[in-house]
Length: 436
Image (tube, rainbow, N blue to C red; front, top):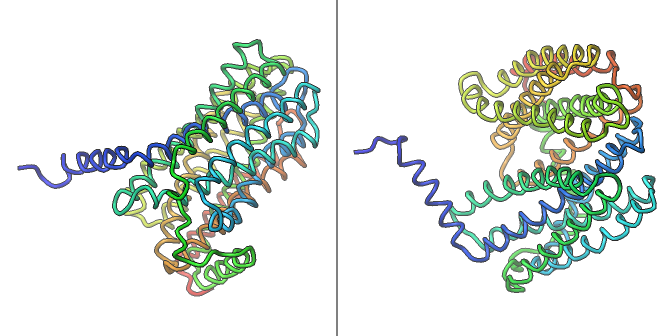
């Protein structure tokens, strides 16, 4: 006889995964996500290689901040309002035509790169493509309950967004590799973009194979309005004002994202302008990818450790420990790595900040789910998403406004580490505080 918790749970998980994957419309919806987000990764790689890692262009901190803001702002501004239209339009049609529009939107980006234009027009063109992409991602999420139901929905929700994020990362990596194979430079960036356009067309054609009415909206509830979305955010703020622990947890994540934004800009400037010669852009891009991978490895450790540690220590205590210990150690490693031009030290610092970020995010999600009533959870999580992205842009802007092109900014690096340590101490000492 098998004991509970030995072989039964894995079998059950695999059985649930099989149940989801045998559903035809889910497979098609899943394919739209994977192909589309892979193409998104190609677009992001093209922007990075053209603006930030091109041998002909030495990026300033302002250019770095602008590039990251273009990548992040659609998620902060457009995302919450996408749902309004998705409750009015047939979502299958949104998935089809939005992908086709993204493919067409790539054409002016290719033309601007061919002309060597890395200014405001390029930023607007990329922002438009990524902004339309928010409708696709929101439409994919809103469509899931129409293709899988019951317990399979939990499996689908766990599988789809995670796989999409991985597909985007793989697309970005493939874009960097393919750019080098076709000779690099601006021509390589244009080649990546044309591949992305093909990917968007393919995603739209896959969506076309789904029945027009299969993904809703079903008409079972009154669609929201733009004013309704704004009022929903106000209501989310009121809910947070009444619940101290979720509010403090969101504050902690926001502070971490400010520090992360600061150090992301610093790392990019270091690898681009200090660790490598200006002409050696490909090596700089490889090193930045390695630093990003180190941060992701730290996040993976945080994802594995946090459930166990938070159950034994509590979410607030575990978050505080990671903020204080990780902020102090990570800040020291990044500072030493920046001033001594040492990649191993920078990698250690990146891993620390990745671990902190994942740990506090998991704990904050738990605090929100436990502390906020179910009928307010959607609004609070939408607000949480906006705060996190805005905090990241704020951190990027702060570093861009103060860091030298070399990235050797000891005062700002120390400030990022101290900010996390102080936040961790505050979070721990207010863990028993009541009310607002």
